[in-house]
Image 1 (cartoon, helix red, strand yellow):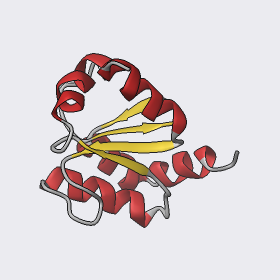
Image 2: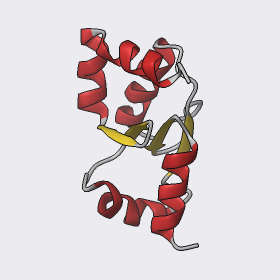
Image 3: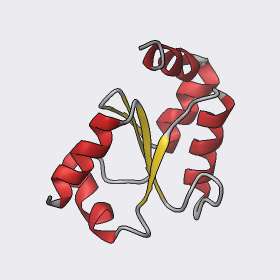
Image 4: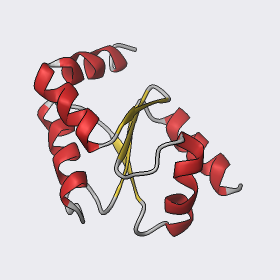
Length: 105
């Protein structure tokens, strides 16, 4: 399976997934830390991929998503965005709504 197929599979198999530097328990950059904290504050159950441990995913994800920076959050197969967008949604209360909708199924 090539890297694009692996990314697509991960996005499709998880209602909420974050491609980040490090792990939710040990983020390796401030943007990843803030984004996972926002998801946790919304009681989101989410999968993650550590792009530092998977350099081929780090290289291929911007082509897949057409988004150049990390972290990247996908909900129900749709790119939500990176740290700034997730934090904006969180502060407006919209992230909670998005997560609640994603978890209804």
